[in-house]
Length: 115
Length: 114
Image (cartoon, rainbow over all chains, first blue to last red; front, side, top):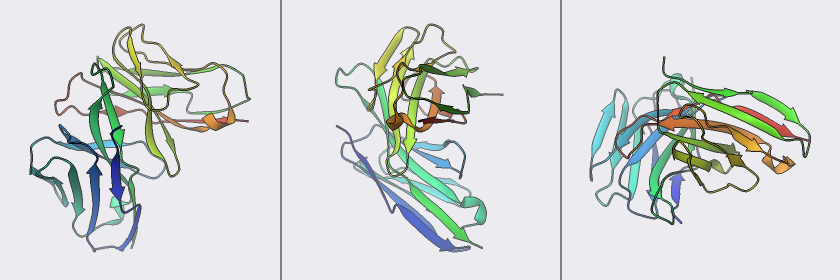
């Protein structure tokens, strides 16, 4: 079945340093989504990328979707303590019958920021 | 305010005692889903529903049941809970289709089975 792999599993940075997490899918994706989960919280939808090679920015966050639509990255410039949390990517797919909608998550990257 | 509401938020129960975790959304979403989150394993989909009376298994459905009798509600049923079902559970909903639809998660339900 579809697999979504994410690296690194953990990343500790000093405040002000940059951070990047990478996501790779075993299959070509129609789109990819990114989520953030604060410690003790629930996943919060950040963005969805649809087009091959797409790049989107949200303030200090830059999201990229690979040309082959099998990989993606999230880059945070000049991290702040408010960026702490786990960042997940997720790729949609279809079940074996081809009739329904599934969402497979990567295992996430836990970002900690030292002030 | 757009909301996905889960109850209970915290529960300790004993092996074999049937329990239901309720999930309700106020956005008229057709698609709803349940996930469990475990350390080192991330979020795994248990069941999902494309619409009323339409449900299907996710990646880890064993030991769980769901029903979708109304659009807004999608309860998760553990008929005979076991300790390996101790986990953090999330319900989620979104509009149908693969468009850029925001997926909304509930705040989570911590379940401990002893």
